[in-house]
Image (spheres, protein in one colour):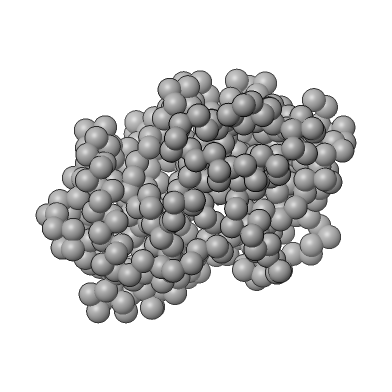
Length: 456
Ligand SMILES: C[S@@+](CC[C@H](N)C(=O)[O-])C[C@H]1O[C@@H](n2cnc3c(N)ncnc32)[C@H](O)[C@@H]1O
Ligand code: SF4
């Protein structure tokens, strides 16, 4: 498709909507599990997870400076005074899990360091965190360890420490190479910085390098995205996340530091995505779920083909791993039938851990309907298709979803069978809208204030 041709469906489906890293989505969570309930749910899920082990997500919130587009939970600082005590809190929180679950060593199939910027930590700080973790964790033979890094603060020495502890997947925040965009979002970084980290990772044996890019940033143009794609294709990462910029200034006031009239919206924003997608597909990348691309040699593409692609709070992952235990400030855990999020305030998180409490701030216990709808939304987000021919698919919960899908079906976004819903190629760009048809909680209580970013 020509990137500049207007799509009449864009205006119709450009509404506020969730990104479905969970169902129910966070604003619709009700009663949080208490610590005993949470441990019981995590323990139950671990019992069922003997063939794949747990996923562990560890949040490191520190960043040196604020990128004004940022939607993550960060703590902006140049001081390393916070780091030592924070590492101690992370290890103490893990000890609470081990003690309460009665497991001297917690076995994992997936370990992910996210942020913030995990490579804010010096090589010595990373070493002490990893040494502490591996006294308490046991990696399965097929375990995967991954990290998100900011190329501006990442050195070969840090990557070497991580590689020595088994890290083989790395994700670099690239965002956009256009100097005007970089300046307005306070994120100036060169192609050379990104290349050096990419090359260092590859030389150390990292077998999957991801670049995070964003479309819809202020001042972004088609020419700028085209030039960014030139640079990206020169470095040929294995995977690319091409995220739609999520504008949520009521949650992230930093996003008020640029002028909203500088944001490409609606058809202008969609054209940026279409251009990026065309460029990547021409280079041999395959589109995966929502906003993701991978070379056919990458494990993410193989997972999609093999039916094991999964989506959780970390985004798309190659294996169905549950439960997910979230460690650190603001981290979210997933027991399958319950969610729990840690305190979002750093001091409060550390105080509660020091008191020997699991620092749960909010969460949700899924009821039977939640679990059915969650399964359908997850299948749509990963396989672009869901079926309800099994008794456990509970057709009664999706009859209203089918009514809501009549219009998208008429618009050619989905094909509805007797017991199936398949997203068409045209519908892929509206995946969030299609999942919204299955979101019974959203339909029952439409938000009366801004909660979500826009779907286009
Ligand atoms: C924790 S950061 C990645 C690591 C590191 N802090 C960095 O920025 O390089 C996670 C990613 O979320 C994406 N992101 C952050 N804020 C966003 C927003 N408002 N909309 C869309 N994507 C966003 C960015 O692509 C960013 O690379
Ligand atoms: S985009 Fe990354 S480096 Fe920038 S503020 Fe957010 S988490 Fe920190």
